[in-house]
Structures are given as structure tokens and as C-alpha cells.
Length: 127
Image (cartoon, rainbow, N blue to C red; front, side, top):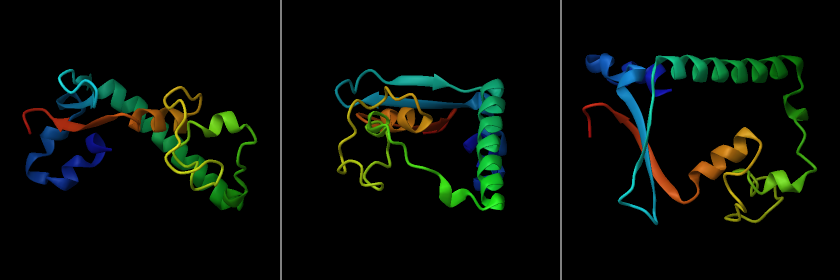
């Protein structure tokens, strides 16, 4: 999202939001002196943007078909332990993420990525 729309946030430095100038740095609370840096580039951005557009198109399709409210909850509670939304669906109490990060679903992987680490996008040359 930053690579796609960052220039709207700071038009005077639009070039700073080129995918090859972005990276994501995260670190675990238990290892604050060992940050992990994930580089980003144009090819990764094209793949990520295509995936986001595909997801948005599927949501639009379901909304247009009137089936958006029919998205079923899973009956496989093992999947729920990885989900960031488990407290909202009342399948598990808040704060109980289980074995975060080992989920097969995208939501499970995202939820797992948020457990035990902190991080943020960084524009090259910025603080």
C-alpha cells in the first residue's frame, strides 16, 4: 500500500515511495538487538498488488451477488487459533492466539506475524 499510494501522502517526495526504496524492519521483543529486514522491490510489489486487487475483486463480486453476508465461519476450530478475528467471532477468548504464525490461511499467517514482534515500513534514507 505504501508503494502504491505513498506519493499521495507526501507528493513532494514521491520518488521515496518506489518499491526498491522501501523495506520492512521487525524485531522480536526477546531479541531487540537482532532486527530482521525484509527488502521490497518492483517485482514483489507487482505480485502483492495483483493479489490485493484479486481479493478486492472477489469481495466486490460477492457484494454484487448479494452473498457477502453468507461467508461461512469455519467448523475447523484448529484454524481459528491462528486467526486475528477469533475474539470477534466468539470462538475463542480475546488474547488467545494459540500457535500463531503456523496457520495455513492468510489470516493465520498475518495474525502470527503480529504476535511477539514489532515493526514498521521504512523509506530508504528516512527515519
